[in-house]
Image (tube, rainbow, N blue to C red; front, side):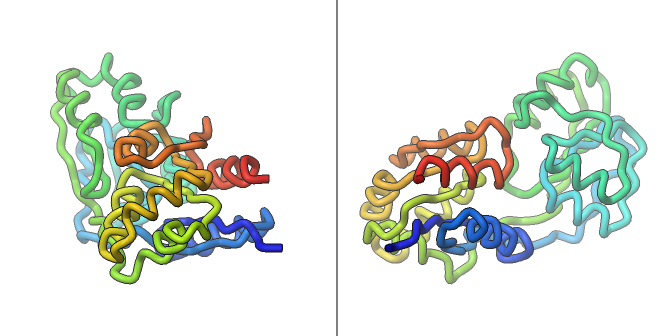
Length: 241
């Protein structure tokens, strides 16, 4: 009997290894197809801001490795980022109820007028955060800690989807959706890959990722309440069982 095959698009580091281990523990066949590659810029976030915002575990690791010591309120966009900050010895002051850029703006907009706000993240961060904080009267500075590119060898999952051999896919950001489609285009299977995904179970972390997929013709089946890879994987596997 053929095992259920589910694609994971995490960067090719401990995150992909953990994804593979999790999927195997759930009794499915992982298709490890990294769609993101992290290229650090070597820049450290500002330390003199009234509020400092981190939006990813990768950003936390790079800031911590650089010896960053913030002096103001420390904000994390969600529990995963907050947990990583605490693991590195930081005290987290703000985590919004809704784990998104819009949720963080909603949490901070009433208190940041005239404040200096440092946003430290990747080069693909949403404009929602910067625009919302600026509209609230904050003085916003953005530091790009790392750039995200697509690994040249990516695309195995697109070919599997195109041949209807992929049962599920786990998209963790809008960029993973876009890079999957770019890889499919390079291999000449974009239309067939989208059709294959629409016969599979597609899971997305967060509404923005889901909206990106839907806008490009990919039908999204699962968006877990918790913005967490394990929650995403378990929800997709449950839908397939």
